[in-house]
Length: 555
Image (cartoon, rainbow, N blue to C red; front, side):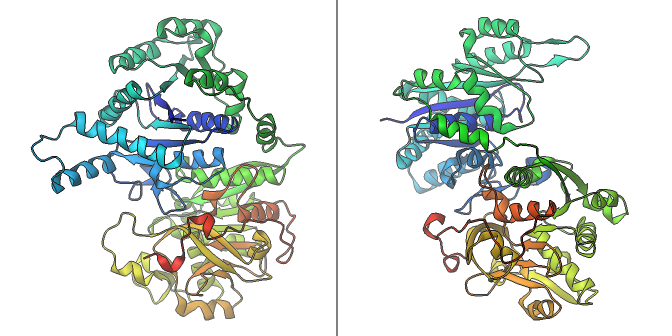
């Protein structure tokens, strides 16, 4: 069957939830047993997301193959329950780099290279090549940004042309505002946005309406009239607390059936058992409450820690718990504020990050967790600072710090040797899925119930091997290393639950299949820790499942 395409665009404003809509549609079509994958286009001229500031862009999501991509890929993977390759991330930087390289090689000799047809032809060919390579029944294309942006205008033109040769439908995700003083939902912004879409040569087949509350029927009818669509194709997607309910909401409005019909797909029925299992993943019975303090330096923009939040949610559901997150700005801890949040916490987590700002506050939080025996989980940067805190306060190395922060007497964290030879910043860290060997009898071994694990990484710095013996002699447990024992992968306290991992296990957490370290962390926060030798979570992943990548094969 020739691949069919669904293009999800957004009108009026960015951050409207296109990724959740695209992921929900992908989930539903996968339950019809179609092979479907989402591809994301982002108009920025960065080649990838690796050098972007999380305050502006949100988290950088890392794939198994080492791709640094938009945070929407986290949503895709969590909804589909499978890993996605970098082939499905297309940016303006990649498009223009490819075209300029072709021009320099002489592929366009005699031709003045233009947006149309050269850029648009390249985009269409790239979409078709990826679809053919993956043997997709349906490709869902999410167009980043907002229709009308200069940054994505050439891509919108490309998918318009794609629709002339391949079966393609367009879904517009719009926003229906409601003025508080008036108390009435307003359609005018969407009407104007639809005119803009038509000027681009695009007629949506469906309109998904984001709003603060349930969409009024009269508003649906009005939008249907102005969009030349039947009223049932105006889809209500009002705010809800749990994004994983979105596929169920779309099913209730028959969007899945309408899309199948519109694309001319075979009339298979949805896998109801799979849909029920999806719902069961977040249905709790008499849940207990658990409060986790996330101490970070980017907490003013929660999207900076999107995968951390979702991994905590998944782990809480798995342990039949209702999660509450205290977002604690680490700089505030340096001045003494925020400590009351730590005192009320069932667990403390320090996520990844870069740079010296706020690190002393994180170290204070780690010390607070260790001294007061509050369950602790450190991710990447959070593991490195866990080692620094232990060196200072247990080993007595008061000047202990990281090479990243400048010269110091005791460099507990230093740059990896291979990283010292690198000058370019983009796509040069230790990235993607790497294997680790676990020490038996440790809490990490109990969490994974395996002698090895494969997790995704994104870092340049590591625990300095010269200090491993000092740390271990004072009781710090090095519970996992690379297979050659060259790099430390996880550490833990022996006196209470405290685990640091150089990896980012949050990237592989799924509803119904939470990241093992997160589940163990939440279990301990609920005062149900089984101990280092009583693991229950199976999360080992073979080398073949990680694209056949071997640690020694990476620079």
